[in-house]
Length: 234
Image 1: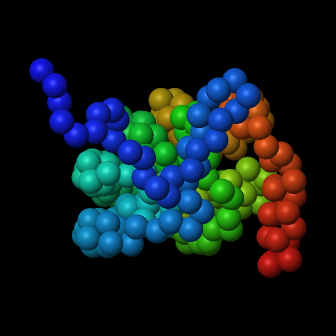
Image 2 (image 1 turned 180 degrees about the vertical axis):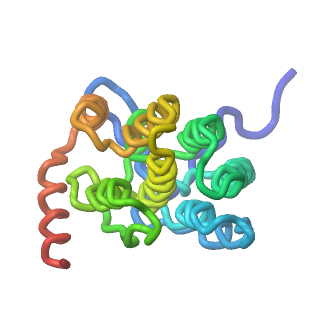
Image 3 (image 1 turned 45 degrees about the horizontal axis):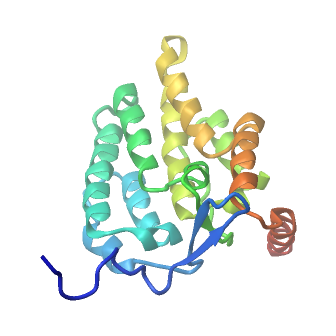
């Protein structure tokens, strides 16, 4: 039976750019200034915990959301609802099972630089806004959060990385507040989340190896230029 009309896969979005490295791995490059304000506004539930609201809004401001379909936004709304529940179910602690599930689920939405590199999506670095540590956080959680802004890997962050870091710092604070009753499972979950933000040399080396394999461009020059821009703005 013959078919009428064109055959083959649907055409790619005209705005989408792709790169190929030397071994033929294709890299998708998200537009630097892409914003999806309508989706972020329409899906926002103002009854969510403020940290959950920040997480949702951050996707509308992040370039990787350029690739989202309606199904991405619908599923993300479900995940943010779970993040809200994890923050409000208990006043002073957080469920380790829910936290682990939310962290894992957020990886599907290219929330952090570690995940974006693993699935070969490049985001052009640009400065992001950093909120102050929340007033109720203890010294360790506050110091950890501030350290991200001052660390080199943050030049690759998008608003979702920052919002995710706020969520992780809140979990870290609540875990530490348990004192002698701190859970080892919670420690493992928080450390895994930290790794997604490339906070340690081991996680950065793993990501760097993937980046070197994936892209044939000079990252060091871009990092230097961006760090100089940050320094001049301070």
